[in-house]
Length: 433
DNA sequence: TCTGGGGTCCTAGGACCC
DNA sequence: TCTGGGGTCCTAGGACCC
Image (cartoon, rainbow, N blue to C red; front, side, top):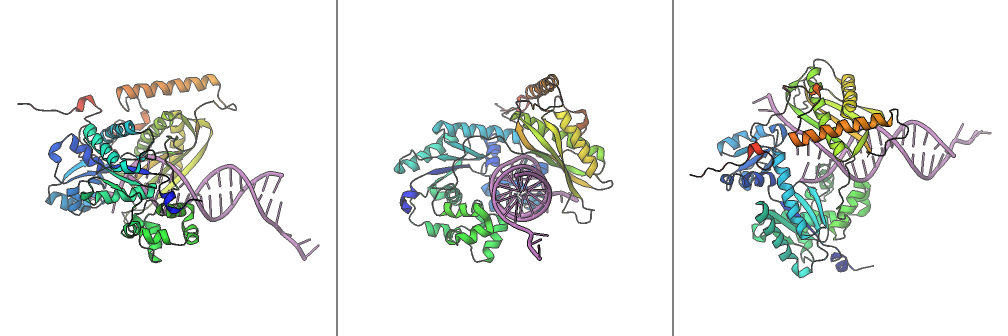
């Protein structure tokens, strides 16, 4: 049984988080955007998902619908971009590759964040090590990052958040053996703690548990009964006891979904079929990429819940397949069948999607298969050829005819920047006069 | 007019088995 | 008159994350 201080130094994590990542990516290829207010929008140009510091200062909040801040954007000449995931994904890979030159103990947590294990770094060297990481990533990629260092992942998240709001910290905040931890945690609203969201946050605040520090000191049995073991884990993490370990191995996904809002309302089933076929292709691609097959297919459609004057309808249906597969035409056939079961005429639909679940490894082929192994092999070869052609010649070079040509339901992306790093036709152009 | 997409984990409850 | 209970599997739904 160790004392509290021994536990504190038992493990050390850092969270490396890219600052305003999508905005920073846009700025790397368009330096005129530096020091200017910039926002990046979600798919369909729906909501704001990234903001430069200047845009934040104008009062543009995270995840706010574009149309609600359009007046601020226009009045202040804020530069607006649609999400360019080809660019951001590629930049993310460069950031992570730089990080992995420092240590193999990296958990890529999201497109713009990674946890690393620093247990082998001497406590006195932590700050300099983190500064070296910042410098290297900025030099190699042009992306600024913040680093929070702490004995648990939850505390590293909090340290990182402080870095972003305090320029005096120069991008690094180390709270290993931090003397004023209680005071620090008192400044963190409870709903901002990693793992506690809006719903639990409201419940906790109604019981006068207002800050991370209050939560840390709340009764374990209360937390367990209201929030289960996840809540309990968060309490330990705030106490400095590591309860969430580094997750380094990239496990295959357990569900794969592809869904999207349409660029406009869609009523006709044939248009929804087109969209669903498109999503089906994308989901099956992802399925084969991780060498899985699915046992179940779910399809859902829904109307715009914000448009109260419209007749509302949201429904999903699931089918269990006779045998696991990742053969696109087969899955598409079931998807179309499910859609026909839930679709209602005369309704304005805004979104549809497909979810592949009960995933299993691709091989070996099921012994109780209805198909001969020769047919299995043939299907596998067809899908391999399809994936190969699409990866070389571009997405959707080969696609299901049912996904349509015009795709008038397709999402809006009115402010897209060029795919500078991943498409030969959209390279950065430099004028030298 | 316009409100993202893609995931994870946990829990509760029903069906079923012994 | 007495009318089990524990384990497991599945699904739906709710919470969270970025």
